[in-house]
Image (cartoon, rainbow, N blue to C red; front, top):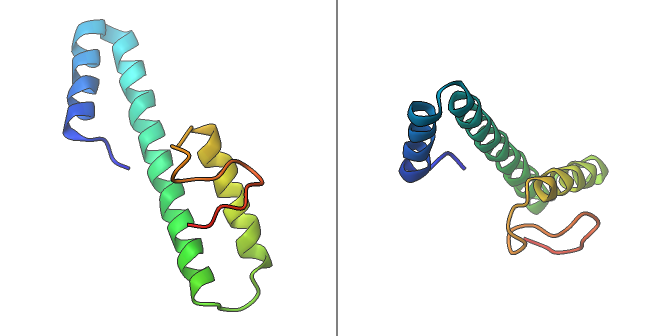
Length: 90
């Protein structure tokens, strides 16, 4: 989930108006957006592999569970991710 143009504009505004603190805040926002984007990539990959029924799924289940925990930490909306230990299917 890369930053939307509005979110990126907000980061630029933070950098310009708040000085060093704004730079730090904008950097954290961009880093978290990048991490969330990476988590979704991993989750999508694991889901696609599971749908194709390839090989042993135990390692995939562990990967999906780990991704759900990380997504929950980042508070991704519940309609996109079940809470840790949840049994919601995509």
